[in-house]
Image 1 (cartoon, rainbow, N blue to C red):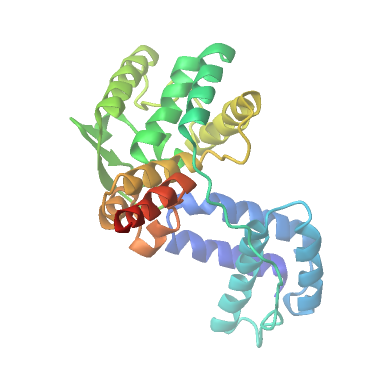
Image 2: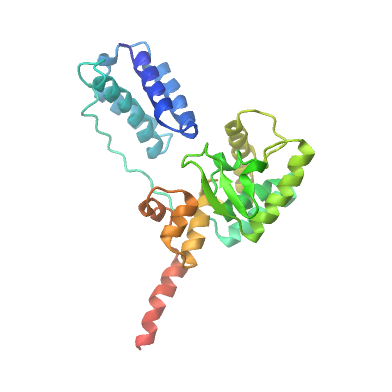
Length: 288
């Protein structure tokens, strides 16, 4: 059995077991491993060779990315052993000494205002672009979910998040600001004769490509012009969660809004700033 056959079988199994939103990264990593070792026999790959490759790749990529790639390769080998396609797993004792970088970034009010100014002054469709970012701040939608929202997903003041997302369908109430954005985007969608509310002028049928293009050509450029560093597009979702928790909303309610399977996962989104810690210890002043 070659590594190419192992990877293709593993990818087919992933397609059967997971949602389409999780396929893109797995497909990209599979193509990378195919180009590296696809023609070799599966049992000829030694764990030290993979460890050396991972450490080399870590110099240019985040630790979490490299770990995800290696786990995908390990999954293929484990699956092949479970299905008795291989007699043993040569990567069973694979050990990677990488410390993943933990990110706890949120978009501050000051940076939000700065970004808004950049969008409105530096982009031809800056108002529409900013509405897409603001909607993520007000609903916690992932960009892969937001790009798939259609007219049928809006039920008054309730957003039914498309089922194609990572966590499946969920209901998110829309605040006043989010409802105003939806109304403006719906009018634009009618002009473009599109079923999609966000990016209705984009005709590419692969909506994930549309989302990726926005992040690459709009979001990153805006952050660079605004001087905002260390913030990724996904941090808008994190900011949404942190704002609610800082306002005293229960974690279980925020969990439902984000579509997380457990409150533990939601807690990883929470960033406690120095102002919040200062307010916490201020209660001790009452003892004086």
